[in-house]
Image (cartoon, rainbow, N blue to C red; front, side):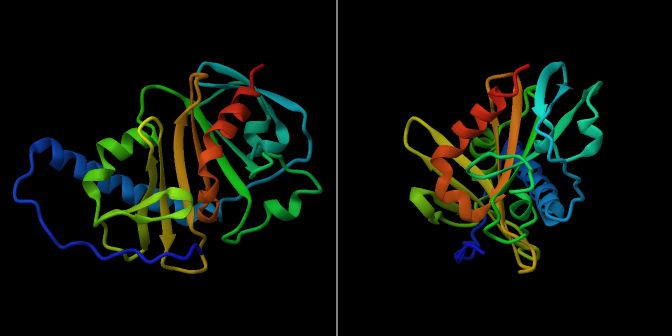
Length: 235
């Protein structure tokens, strides 16, 4: 796991909350529980792979795309045809290769340094991306001051009971560009430590990518690489 020690919460309580802030806190707490639940089962989700790079026509919402079959996690989605809400993909980081005989061992790696990057695509219907959630929700859920992370990132611990593990946001704002990724380190050391980020691709799609915490060091190149990959799916 990524070596880090999160500070304890400050224990301070705000004296006054506006209804809006209270609502944001409730929403944020629900998001914590939902996200943690997904991450706890992320590596155990059954997937079936194919080595075929043949492109499969799919429609995500009303957006047509052509996806290499060996990047598609689920066989029912590789069947093509019809409209789907969310497309589930996986590639290796940083090569962005799909599954093959040569990459099979890497795709099977469950460890904390696994190169597998999970990518979900769905139509952009106006939901918040990770940067927006950070600014509107998660900053109000901070459990203490941020502390230094890899490659200039700041790691902001989020409030929670800590029973399942440590929840934090890795972020960096240089005045022009904001990067934020939601991360979770399970208390159970048999489970991997992951991060998740959702971005708008400019192609009418929201892309959510999940990766091991060790790859936070590559944060500067991730968004661009994902956007380029998604653009390559144009029919």
